[in-house]
Length: 420
Ligand code: SDX
Picture 1: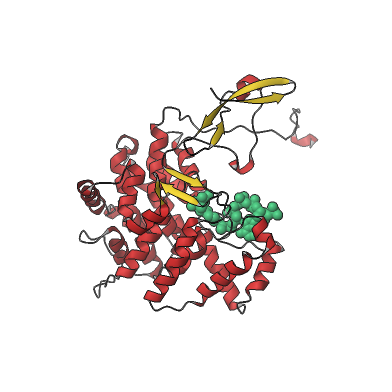
Picture 2: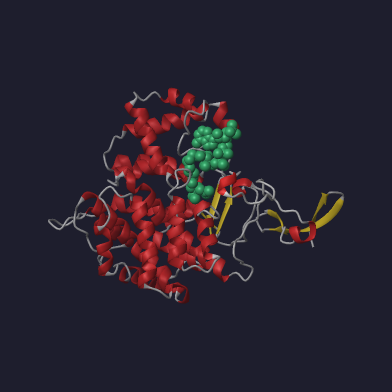
């Protein structure tokens, strides 16, 4: 057995070493505290593996991302998002019969219980759709109380109903009637129809928009132990129900340092545009730490985010196909160009990430900025579900309960209020 040696307070400890098939090395500290009384300390878990997983592989130094072994570039070019959902959750690409059956399931579970419409009446039109999505997903557990006994069915329900909940939250915000899912449309077509159709006239589905949405959902589908997926695993580790675990993932994704960045990128590009488009000025501001270049940097990718590379090309193509000349795209490209020439960004390995270009495509599709992180959540749904299922199925899984180094007061006697 491979071992690592630790010398602490003159005492030597041997720790087992785990090596993954892609050359990753993990020092197993499962018995460290029991043998040495010591724990490890790792703010942000940048050096800490929480699990072993066979779903997604990332090589951050070389910009490699694979879903169940398939390179993201190939999946993005050839796959349908529903195939990717099946692949991530089940481990293999579906054959024709399996795909047809899976699509049928997703189609026939896309409605939400009619009573759930009443929930929307309580929200203000200004309610952030991520608040609606997380609470509606948690509320699904009240309609399907035995979630963890029927995992396969409830995975289908979440994949099928999340787009409906998202589209309904958009209709609520703009004061239009809800458009119900239709059984004759594809997964992406159904979502676009629920978002943009109005009762007064039929909605003309655009193949360009369907292709763009399919690509965006695929590129967001999974990303191993990111903050929101780790949250889903954390909550699932307490044996909380599937809906509660996914709802927690939605909340974690909402943060501007994570999925919420795509919304902040657009706000940033608009701010630069409205301020005369002076990119150099804002690069200097970022270097002076007056603000963060949203959509830049990544904990894992240290050369480039392969998704950003694909999205940059897609942004050009989609906007051209739609005949949209968005000045924000040029600003984004110039921002990338200036930053990647600058020592401050290069020395810190700060490159565009998945959130940098995605918003430009969502915007070209007519999706409002407030919905961008919801779109990220729709893409990440299969990844969250696959990791929850894998975590639950691993006999090594225990409830997640990290330790700490206490830095507070020593023991002291309670003071009555009269003595304070
Ligand atoms: C996603 O984990 C995943 O896989 C996430 C994700 C997924 O698919 O699930 O890829 C999706 O969340 C992408 C990231 C979206 N977030 C943003 O775009 C927000 C802006 N980026 C950063 O806040 C930051 O880069 C993070 C959060 C992405 C990474 O944070 P780290 O790894 O903790 O890095 P850090 O904050 O410690 O920064 C390291 C250095 C610091 O400089 P020093 O203090 O060492 O001098 O880089 C600087 C930071 O100040 N820095 C930035 C910066 N990001 C980091 N400076 C300017 N602009 C930035 N965007």
